[in-house]
Image (cartoon, rainbow, N blue to C red; front, side, top):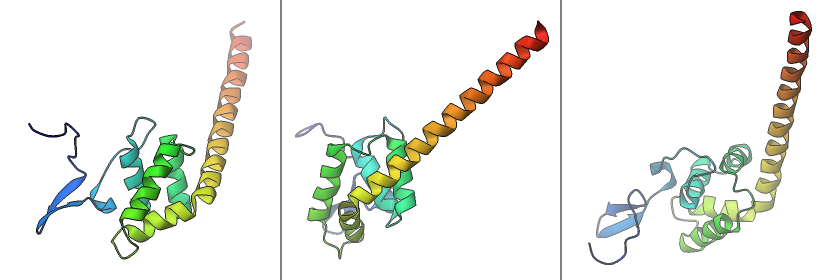
Amino acid sequence: MSGSSLDLDGLVKKAKGGVRFVYADEAQAHIDSTTPIIDVALALARAGRDLARTAEILDASGRTEDEHLWSAIAELGRRFTEADRDGDVWTWLTRNRRALQSEAGRLEISREQRSREERERGDQRSIFDREEDG
């Protein structure tokens, strides 16, 4: 092994005349709070210019406000022109960052509210179960 120990497996593909960065639709990853930033960025690009889908990915990743994620997306937008297969999506993500963050925030609030309501319903059932047993 020579050079860098950086693992590029899955991020670089062989191409005519050398290698190229993976296209978003070629990368697959389960998105959660442990997913690496590059995989979250690729999932966002794979979702395309769809506010709801990209917001869901941001919410699932827990990286809505992650400056490293947004820096990576901005850099990908600078490196790949809009003529590139994913280039227009990188640009769209960068330009729509605030709207995406806002929508992801709404999803998080809604999820937390549902979770709280479910806990409250469970607590109410527990009270009634204890009364029946008593």
